Image 1 (spheres, helix red, strand yellow):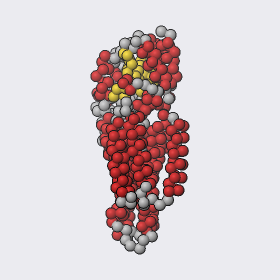
Image 2: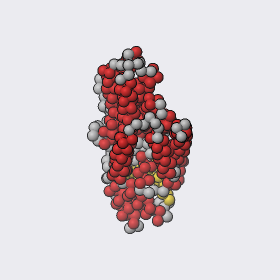
Image 3: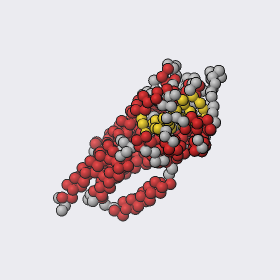
Length: 467
């Protein structure tokens, strides 16, 4: 039995890793995402059970207490946290994952500190990497949470000599790490690099604007996976290494997809402080006085929608803020009962986290087959009678195609201006995250419906019912 147990644990880890890969594959499609989540959760359960059977686990009482507390918090959060708050929730979970990994490294260093012999080089390097990645992920994710929650400004926060200061912190961490490799029993130096890693996380995220949060969230998710993999090397646990590598790899792939969707490099996202006055080029309050917009009321909007043959709904962050997804679904249902074909156009970076619009529309039970990504829906706008833009701005700005001086030039957008008519629901004429005027608002085929997304969509529903 004693010979079988280690082999059985490793085989269970292999099964769990296979389930992780299968679940990750299914998470790539909205139609199979829920099933993929269940499959991955089963894999995690197997991994936890196998780890608890390991002879190196000595205190089952504390593990049980942690499982109970964590499960209760998870259940409460699942029922209480609104779908519109998912970006903040994901940020918190990333941060807690990084903190857990860093604590594993700190605990292992503390354990080895009590031994008279030198700390092995491989263990030392694993601990130092885990502290760096885990610390940056922890504080960086909580800063991202604070920006998304409105606790701190969502605009980039910069100050003179910011990058040299960040470089100094990084050099200090490297120097401290080198010292610990030579003299690994120095607790003050170790605590110093832990503190530096936490400060680096704050400095990493504060210069990034709220509109770049989809990239930041996916990158921090990747960091949390890398931190977990490093923790796996610290405690020599194969399952932790595999799971962390999967999260790290998938997160960095998603980060690259997000950057391509904005036609920007990761370096630009992290270091250009995009969204500040300096980066915005032309501000919304300049050079627009000679332009006019056409505004309509809900009754006119309802007539345009009700008598159309095809309608494409383009959701954006304004829909999320107003929590209008259920009203949008009600409007779509009413239009379909009148014989109108309704589809949804989803831009990859609409919202504040990857897949934000998909999550909100799924909560409102919008059929998966009605959701179309940018590449699929763009060729269909020419045959669309009405494009209804709800709270989206930069991702529908035609300047990205035509204005070489625009900071968003080259960014792939949804081609709503090519629809026969466009209705834009917006509170006012304020600029989007990029800080530039939206040429779409002034097109002859565009009409503006000013007001809160939830209120305006609700009024459209009432007016459509009377047609």
